Image 1 (cartoon, rainbow, N blue to C red):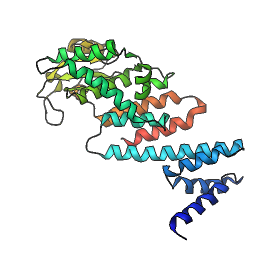
Image 2: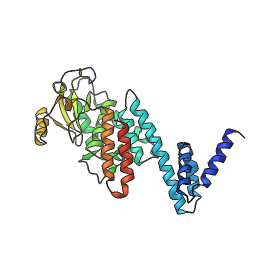
Image 3: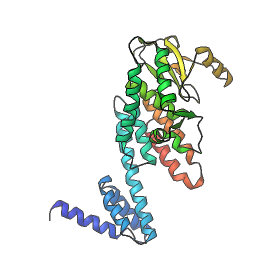
Image 4: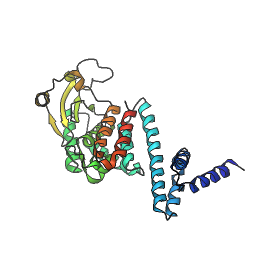
Length: 293
């Protein structure tokens, strides 16, 4: 018997045990099925379609979710360990928690269209403020993207695929989208660590976070709120710190790492699942965030 035939027979035997009333047996069967990885999902979906028992269908749905979740854990761990953590890829991984069958190609095409429209308006002679004005004009006027304050009643506002689809996001997802555009266009601007905000700092061309030891505040032209593209001065930011009763330090003005940005995104998504019926989802998202610590 070749290995494929043996594997096929084992899968068939496991599938026959999915409806076993003994919870311990199902737990063992479940673990064995999950060990096959995502390649077994089409078999499970086929089994679901040919099953009349509602209880068995629920068990199959649980198994499919487990497989997606384990795959996502592995992908996020791999992303975290890369030398360069691509912010867009990280945001897509978070979206795949809620939308496991997400096709990324249309999203990448949408973003490429936005990037090209911005790029056509840019040239080497524009000042950073003029660059920011182009970004604002294309993102918020031409594409009519709009941002709002974070609401945990609207989980879709956190996911980049839904932001592009609905043209609506919150402070966090819009901050990530704005940062992604800056990265794609080689604009020296980054999300910074200002409490309860996703503010983008436009840095001087000679500032690099990993090579510039000086206080980043001295290397920032201005700040942009990605919710609406509004530009702010340092004195505006100082007023905000005064309002929240925090003394600003140099750390607040350093670029936020992509890994920390995605961790914040996951932590905030987790707060959407505070309902007692969704406690499992909250625990899963919290566990994903911990991968990035």
